[in-house]
Structures are given as C-alpha cells and as structure tokens.
Image 1 (cartoon, helix red, strand yellow):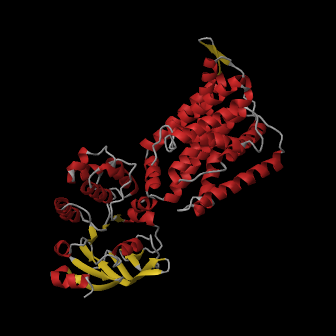
Image 2 (tube, rainbow over the protein chains, first blue to last red):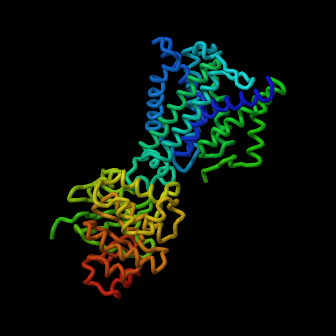
Image 3 (cartoon, rainbow over the protein chains, first blue to last red):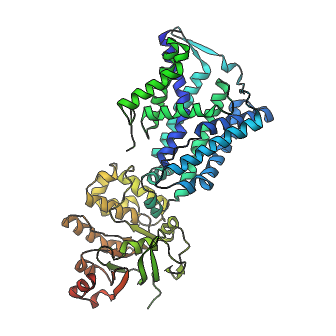
Length: 286
Length: 234
C-alpha cells in the first residue's frame, strides 16, 4: 500500500473512530460526564446485535432497527436510575460508577458468551472495493465514513437547530436556571445519554462487521474515542470527526513504517497534539 | 380582601444546617407588584429560591391560587405560571438572544408574549437577536432576562435585584417597561436595593432583616425614612 492509499484508508478509519467518539463527546458536552464504560457499552451493543441477528436472521445493518432503540432505552435508564445520583460538582463519582459498569459488562459478557472472538457477517460488502484514481477503496470503510459524516451532521442539527438541542445547551450551561425556565434537567440528561447510546449501537454494528470483537475489546474503543475527542477539541462534533481522521491517518501511516508501529503512532500523535494544543485542534467548549 | 395569587406562610428555609429564613410570610395579590427590600444577606434571594423549590420548604408554606405548591418541581413552575429573573441575569451563554427567548417560550405557557413582542418592548434586542446573549451589555442582558421571563406568559415574575450593576439610564429603561408588563396581567415581586424607587413602583412592600419580616404593608403607608430604617434593622 502506497502513502496515498494509506492516507485514504486512514481518513476512512477516522470515520469509525469519530462514531466511537461522537457519543462520548455528546455526553461530556451536555453533562460533563466521562463515561469510562463507553467502549464496553459499544461491545455490549455488538453482542446484542449478534443475538438479534442470530435470533431473527436479519442482516446486521437491519438489526440496527432493534439495537438502536434498545440501546437508547438502556442509556436513558442508566442515566435516570444510576448516573443521575452521581452527578454534581465532583467529577469523580460518575467516573467510578462507569468504571464499575465496564467491569460488570466485561465479566457478564465473558460469562454469557465466553471470551471467544465474535464477528457479524455483513456479506460481500465486507470485501467489496472500488477503484478510484488507481486506489482501492473498501466499500464498507467508505460506507462507515459516510455514516460518520451523517451522524455528525445529524447531531449538529439536533444540537444547534432543534428544541431539544437548545435544552441540551442550556442545561449544560446552567442546570439550575434551565430548571427555572422549565426544562427537566433529569429528562434532558437522560435523552442525551439515550442519543449517545443510539450512536454507540451504530458504532457497534460497524465495528463488528469490520473486525472481530470479544468481551474485553471495549477499553481500546474507549481510548480511540477519547483521543479523537481530545485531538478534535472538546465540544466540537466536526472537530471530533477531524480528530478521528488525524488518528486514523496516524495509524495507517504508522503501519506503513512497521505493522507493530500502527497503534503506537496514533497514541504518539495524540500525545503531540495534547502537548502543543491541550484544548485540541478545534475547541469550542470553554 | 381577595384570595392572594401567591402567598408564603411561615416559611423557614436555608442551606444545609444554616437557617436563613425564619417564619417569613407575605402575600402577592393578582395584578400587583410587591417590593421586597432588605440589606445583603437579609434572605431575599433565599426566599425566591425557596418559593421555586430550589431550597427546602414544607408542602404548604407556599401557595399559588390557593393551592399548596410545595410538592411541585422547580421545572413545572413555569408552566404553572411562576418564573424568575435571576440576580446576575444568568443567560445561557451558548444560546443566542433569540434562542434564550425561544427556549423559555417552548417550555413556558402560550400567550400574548412571544419573542417578537419582546423585540417590540426592547427594540435593541431585535437588532441583536443572533448574537450570543452573554456578549451583550449588562443592561441588554437584563432585557433578555426579563424577556425570557415574559415569553413564558407567567402570572408571577420574581425579579431578583432588578437593577443591580446596571447604568442609571438602563435602569430607567427597565423600570419604564414595568407598567406595560404589569398591565398585561403579570404580577411581580421585585427585589431592589433602591428603596425609594421600589416604593413608588410597588403596591405593597415587605422588608426583610436577617431572615425575618420586619415591615410589611401597602407602599403608600411608608415613608422613605421608615423603609430605610427597617432596611438597616434600626
């Protein structure tokens, strides 16, 4: 693979990382909550999709019609009945609770499904490719990138053009005044978490169609998501996409140097960005 | 006398172990303005927070249209008809002027007050509708805060420190809008440091000192000197 092809593959990989990161960015933006179990919930969603596909025979992408609302429901319930009690001035309690969730999910999944790697079969789309200007571009990575752009655009629309988006931003700015204005902050936080979990479900199915996963795959997804958010700049969803792309390109170029350098290259770029621009490349949040 | 629109009966409240209000009682009549005066730390803002359910209060300590609202959640009060213009404006910084008004209109009650009507009342806001609300001057921000309360079409507005930190000319603009607001059927409790100004604006007055009511009655019954003395707890 040449440099140009590596860059194109990196851009497309960045789309997947942006989807990992979008839900994380959204929840942090609205609630200042760092969900340590974000990657594990993505893996949980992948197992739910696996069950839905095996029980119904649906195509993995069609299973999203069930997995997305189910995950959104789980997210809303988690926020209202568990995380809501931990929110406050101190950022540590929700971090500890989500860390606990991560441990529970990993152990519960390995007890239920074993630690064997699993994968969702999406059919020929997994291997189909297009030839563009002499470059071979996989259809599934291209579709993943297009979905990432669509998700970011949809979230931007919700955030900046809709009633619930105004409530998200107002609650994020000042929950007490939002309450006085008539906004139920608990419900708004629940909806933000539901939206985040819905995006996680999409990330999960795309991940599971592209690569194998096991109960302990979550933390790596969390790290890629974190890095994309931080590189792009806190609170900026398009920045998160840019962060994902930077991370993806760093990894694919790193792999050009040596396959073992792929992951490390991404982390090094993250480290350099953090050192030079601690608030990320395109920060929006104060 | 007719049943009060909003009444507070023997209200005691505070922050954790610190009690800030001791048996406070007051009544706001329909279509009336009640002035609430008192030195810093007298308990005025605490009283508003307790009315809004942001601080603890017993179920029947606050009544609205004759019914106790102690169990009503803060976020449900705007739909019931009670809103506040908070001290320091507290506009949402990531929302534009128009969005601040839109949000309050969406979560409040429908009625004659709309964002467009607020722009008629305060034309400068119409010109700056797309600007971030917190980028405006202090006076303009206060206009947005008042507009945000109005578009909920409330029965009662609690104005906390209505003129604090504003230039005198801006205070005049804000006070000039009050009769129009009152004429649209909105009652108000106005917290104000300028006792003479609030005496002229309001129908009745309550003075708090160290969390207790030290003076209460129709505004015309009090002289500026009497109010000032009560204000300083003399």
